[in-house]
Length: 153
Image 1 (spheres, rainbow, N blue to C red):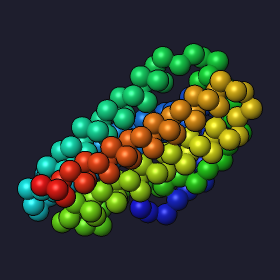
Image 2 (cartoon, rainbow, N blue to C red):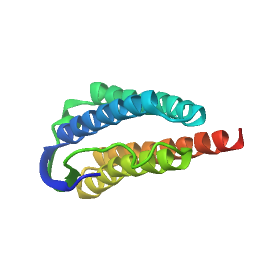
Image 3 (cartoon, rainbow, N blue to C red):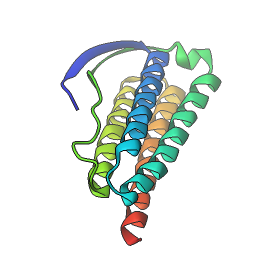
Image 4 (cartoon, one colour):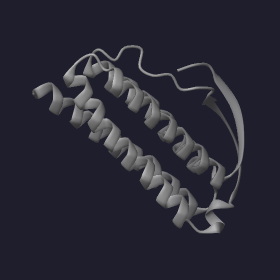
């Protein structure tokens, strides 16, 4: 990852907008890595990761579409360090390198949702954001299982 920049967010909707844009960019990076992967095993793993990442992106987009305006418009006085840009993995020649990169990239969202949840004083909004952080954790476990499955091949 490249250096971070400090960003202030004032509404929950802005947090979700950031998450969706971030995940869409990660999806683009995965797709570009898929085309240039040096081995069949890495290509297969990236294909599986691409599906999982798209599912995660879709889940957050659906939450954003379905969320009530009182949640999306909820004021938060939140400032966070965000990556200025997302770089691909340092190396795409091993399944481990690709997996570690993707888990690290997704950790940013988990941390973001957790931090915002901790700063919100409305219980149902805090529960929603904690649920999104938990969803990222579940996603990371899926990625780890996919990695292990490809190592067992």
